[in-house]
Image (tube, rainbow, N blue to C red; front, top):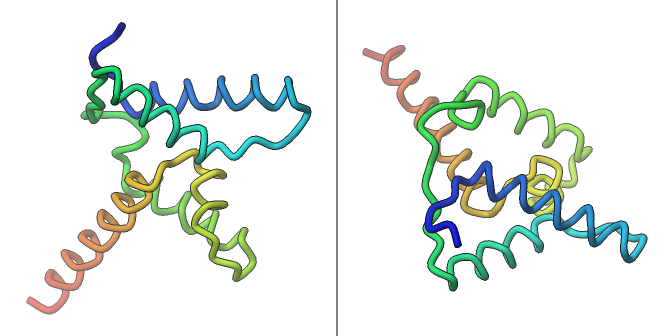
Length: 114
């Protein structure tokens, strides 16, 4: 079994598993739940999750715009589970995205006031 996996690879696996379950049960599988189950299972099997150093996930401009669009699409019902599902993120990734946005904002404020 693979000993390292990126979060992008986990997300691809999550989509595949959720799509297979959807087809089998003719329903709407919660991708966040699938992602959490896969993460827990793979971790118990010794898989270590590593961050990729490049790619769309690390592009703050792209990810912040994507997050804002998903929040707007929620029509004022800020449901983090639906946002995570629509963006194919797990809880850790959503928290990371908010932390990155806060850091960019704090850095920008510091430049403006100095």
